[in-house]
Amino acid sequence: MAEGGPGRPGSVAGLAVFFGSAAVVSVVAAAAVAFPGGALEPMWRLNPRAREGFAAMGPWAVALLVAVGLACALAARGLWTGSPWGRRLAFGILAVNLVGDAANALILGDLRSAVGVPVVLLLSLPLLSKRGRKFFRNPS
Image (cartoon, rainbow, N blue to C red; front, side):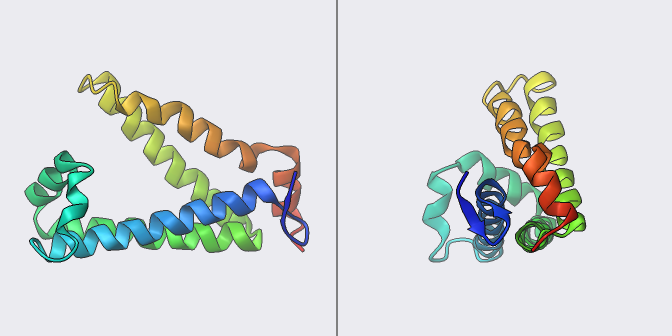
């Protein structure tokens, strides 16, 4: 396994980068919702349903996206430094995503959401591995 730094498993480093990227995407999405029709508007071509959903939420959408971005940024920092709270926060974020994807698939019949279930489980593996657990007990 490649190293992400001294003692940091590469898989944990990758997960930290993933959460950091998610933080950036969330904040960019918040800006796109806050300023509709602006320079970021073309991003909604990737998922027009998301734009409709956020528009229906009104200003709460911006608050939610900023909160998600902050949570992801904190998780990235905690994972990078090997902090036990970072591991717990990452698990919490992944668990919320897992419940949301499963509910969308089972209740709403959106089978595209079902893809998120195994993805979340795979993303959890670095946190559950023996090397990952050891890193969060004794980060360098």
